[in-house]
Image 1 (cartoon, one colour):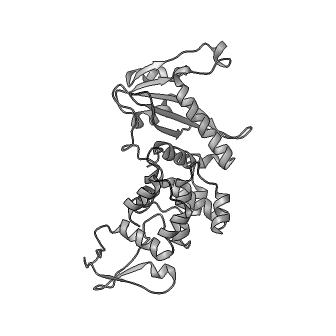
Image 2 (cartoon, one colour):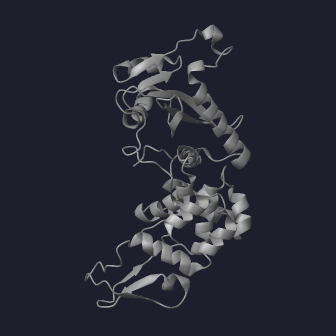
Image 3 (cartoon, rainbow, N blue to C red):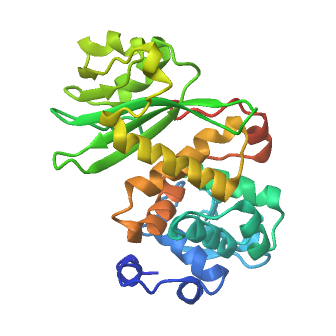
Length: 322
């Protein structure tokens, strides 16, 4: 698939499932796409440096192996990628990624399970791996800057009468007062220490921080230009509008409508993965044509091998890990 041609089709608004299956009609087309992403300058053997190889024949897992012509060293095409060790056809993987990023509000695991004819547990693991690829690097994806406004508030995510995941919402406001990027990070508590762990690496120096009446934020004035709005306790529950946080409240409303309407509920320890998807889609709302190709690129460049066992036994996910 030629990336420029794909992006052009998406921008022109006529790239759907029919066009997708034209670009990826079989396993070979998907394997060729992974090969181009993994070896942009051509295959080079890690052992002898030979640039000539041949494909093995047989079952799909064997057919994905490349064998050096000189030293006979074998290397799997999907090794150390998002598709490492998978027994699911690559075409179904590609369609799952396509459905997650090109559908405006995402898609549920139950629906994909019906479309792909795969067990829902397997689809959940596949989607979790993709959401892990949507994670933004803290160092490379800082928000704010000199004289830039960032709205900040804490929220609780979860259903009624159920355990809730505390999260910190950070919304960047551009110089023209338009919404910029958003970061939503799971936190263990609303204490100063936990908030500082998030704010220090994520927000750039010189940022103007807008917060509510939480006294914890008073300690942050030495690190940021801080706009602190104090509200008396008597009027806190009666009027919790925070007019200077109006755009952030709209984002939080969109987030809650999205996960309640699309996913209904999810485990607390998986909250971070769903927040990844929401932030990834929101931050690239003006470049939707690049979403699919960007995830494919990340799936090869960011080797994260996650099995169902490690996923199910893991601690609550945090975007600050790694």
